[in-house]
Image 1 (spheres, one colour):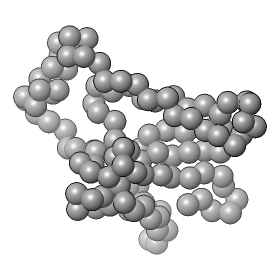
Image 2 (image 1 turned 90 degrees about the horizontal axis):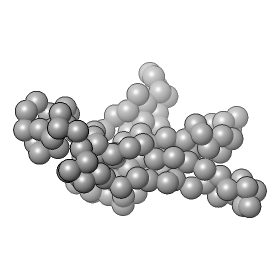
Image 3 (image 1 turned 90 degrees about the vertical axis):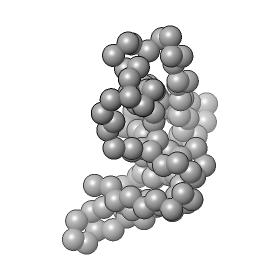
Amino acid sequence: MSKSNESHLITGGTDKQIRFWDFISPTKCYTVSGLEPSQQKPTYDAPESFQGKLFVSYDTDLPSTDAIVQAQLPMREGRGPMPPANNFKDAIVDLKTIDIPIRLMISSSKDGTVKLWR
């Protein structure tokens, strides 16, 4: 999905996450959407033994309810004010970028949701 002078890829799939992969620097890779509010951000790496041909995302497990700070429990249990959902409920089936009038990305999923991203 990158322009010819850039080196990146944006992916989405059955894990319901959208990821930005930077092939020049794995430290610039990130998850755009799909993380739970209490889930830590994954780390990205390019093992040297694969000479830049493999990038790995190390996801973290969701912490147990006992390990979550008490202030986060109401949000995790669905009590109190809830921020708008950023995650899809089913597999991401399509991604498209458009540049007119501004650069946007459109994503859609099997649950029928279509989202616009700046």
